[in-house]
Every structure is written in C-alpha cells, then in structure tokens.
Amino acid sequence: MMTVADKQRVDRIFGPWLVLLLRPFAQLAGKLLGRDHSATPRGEIVFIKLLGGGSLLIALPALLGVRRRFPNLTLTLVCGSPVAPFAKLMGVFDRIEIMNDQSGTFALLASAARILGGLVLRRADTIVDLEVYSQLTTVFSLLTLARNRIGFYVASTYWRRNVLTHLVFFNRARGVFHFYSATALLLGAQPAAREEVHAHLLARVNRPQVQRDYVAVGGGCSDFASVRLLPLAEWREFARTHQPEISAQHWVFLGAAADAQVSEEIAAAVREIIPDFSHENKCGQLSLEESFAYIAGARQFIGIDSALLHAARALAIPTVSFFGPTDPATLLEPIVDHVDLVYYRPPICSPCLHVTQTPPCKGCNVCMELFTRETVPYTPWCEDSAGKNVLPTELI
Image 1 (cartoon, rainbow, N blue to C red):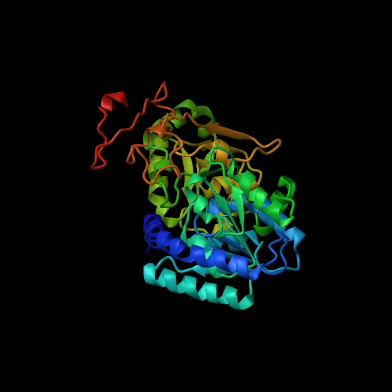
Image 2 (tube, helix red, strand yellow):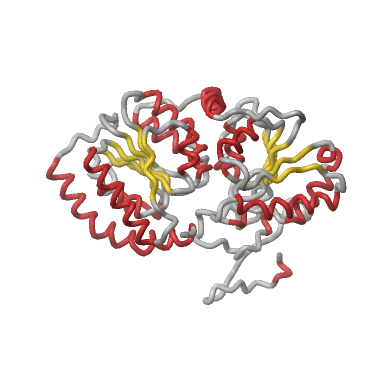
C-alpha cells in the first residue's frame, strides 16, 4: 500500500522531467492550433483531487455551483482511492475515476494511463486540477488534450504557465475555499450557498434514530501529517478544564479502523480525569455514510483538523476543533450563525504543512500543546546538514 509520502516521492521523481519535456510541445501546439480557450465549458468537465477527502468537502459549495450551472454536462472526478468514498457520498459527479494508489508505483501509473486514455477518447473539454502542488497532475491535465486546463499556481508552481490554459492564483495565507470558488466563477458558475450545501449533504445521509444525546468525536486523521493529532496529555487537560460538560456527555468516536486504537487511548486519558466517562468506539465499524449520519445526529462534534470536522461543518453541527500545524483561517470558511470553538495558538513555525516537505519539529508537535502550556512555545527550529535539530531543547 502506498503512503502519502510514497505518492509525493513519485510526483517529485517523475513530475519535473515530464513537465520539462512536454512544455515546449504544449507551447508549439498552442500556437499552431489556435484553439478557442474561452472559459465556459462545452463538454465533459473533469476535476482532479488525488488526496484529501476533507478538501473535497471544503470545495463542495463550488462543486455544487458547477453542477447546478451545467446540469446537462458530464462531471467527472479523477481521484485517489481514499477520496473516492467522499466523492460517491457527495453525489455531485456523474463519473468517478479512481487511481490505483494502493498497489505500488506501476499500478498507479497503469491506472493513470487507463483513465487518461478514456478522457482522450471521450474528448473531455475542461480539466480543473484541484491539486495545488502536484507536478504529475499538471502533466496528466496536459495529456488529456482538453481544450481548457485550469489549475492553481503559487511561486513554486509558476512553471504551469503555458502548460495549463488558465491559472488561478493560490494564496497560502488565505482560505482555500476562496480559490475553489474562483475556479467555479471562472467556469461561469456561482458557488452554492451554505444552506444549499447543508440540505444537499443531509439528503445524502440518513440520521440514526438515537435514544440519547451524544457528541461525535474525531480524534484520528489520515496518514498525511500525523502531527495534527492532539497528544494524550492535551486530551487529559481538556477533560480537566471541561469536566462538568464532559461528565454529562456520551462520546461516540468515529473514524477508520486505523483510528480505533488512538480513540481508545483518548478515552482512557479522559477517564483518568472523569472515571465515569461514557463513550463508544465506532472506528472501523461504520461506512462513511453511516459516520456522516452519526455526525448529522450529534449535538456537537469535537476533533482535530480532519475530513470529519469539515463534514460536521457542512452538516451544520456545532464544532470544537484543535489546530496546530495547519491554520484554521485557511480551512474553515466563515458560516453565518454556525458555532465554531477553535483552539489554535500558533508558534512561529505554524502553519508548516504545505510550506515544507517535512515538519521542522520532526514530529514533536509542540503546536498542539494547547492546554498544558501557559505560553506559546518558542520554536526557532534549526538543523544541521544531516537534518538533525541542533537548538537546545530548553528553548522548547
């Protein structure tokens, strides 16, 4: 099974030289063919999102807007296997093409070639690459031969110019939801209102019939950036400072099977403070639709930055969230009358995800020490040529 790090490594190895090789041909073809690149789609619209089911949920207003604006056009998603369940549940796409990213590099490239061949044969009209940093998705977009190829650019990806036909500036310091909306506007679609998003997603799930109030909890996350996890000592201190409320609550832990152990560890940490703490661990026992249904029926959601948090917000459930290596301002779109309690005390190294390949703390996520520290830690990370941190630990 390929990890996120494996996929990023494949992108770094194959992406640069393929872009370098193909870019002159793209420029020459652009001059010779003289195609009409007006932004309004005329045929199949293809979105690319290989990683991040949560990102797809953040993009849901934009995607619904495109679906509403072009009801007679085919909407296709090309995605990685972890994203596919989210795409199916959202019910926006007519086709979902899944990259085989679970069986090694050869299987990944073979599935990409198969999907690419289908898009070329169907003459896909417009490609919207929602991956900000990938080079291989840019190559993939070009090889579809689509009339329009839309993607984001930052300073480090400006090489996409003359490879893609339309570039949307992506500001890492601002909300990603702004730039997803910009792609919809470029296509001529108005992003859906939050009320429409809520109604649409709620119609896709069935709320469980429960006999008592409960709080949905998402303590785990995908294999991308485990530094997002809240340390057990922080859960313990959170329970101590919220003992009256938690004592009266029943927590239902949600997530994949891989999250079951960390959820039990969180429950044990909370029980140290609240001996009669009531909880259920549903991690790995529910489908994604069932997990969303549990969230939809909850009185509140508590969790870290993960897809479940974004699902709770889309379903209009009040949330309590913990952030450290990511900036909530870039991920949580303001929603009128929605209740969000966000814990975030960024040290100077935060946010680090998507800014550096490896978190400078090497996994020592002091940014998530939200309750056990009285002050924000001073983190001027410095390392030697071997990548070892060299500043004295007393600074931290």
